[in-house]
Image (cartoon, rainbow, N blue to C red; front, side):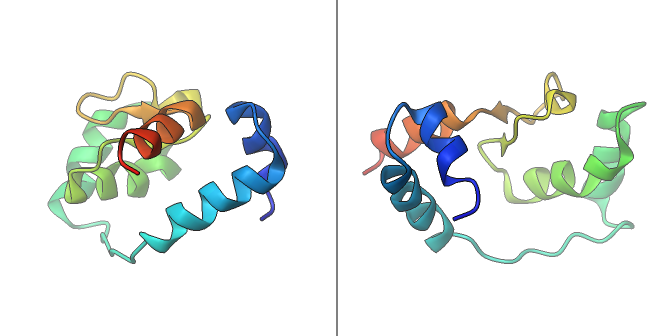
Length: 99
């Protein structure tokens, strides 16, 4: 896993633990398409405002799936109404709370 070492630092553990964490996370991944003309994309465009427009698909996807948040270190996602920005520690805490 390409980012296992970075994630290990965030989690305060080993790269092996981080790899297991990522493997568990990726088992739950599924593909969801959100097109630029979908209602969630328009809402995301409005919520993002003057921020990075390349973030629109991520916010639109979070809105469509009613996600708990977006796991990112990108501060542009901070403060977007209705879309929580999750840190690595936030995601790890979710996994620990739901084994």
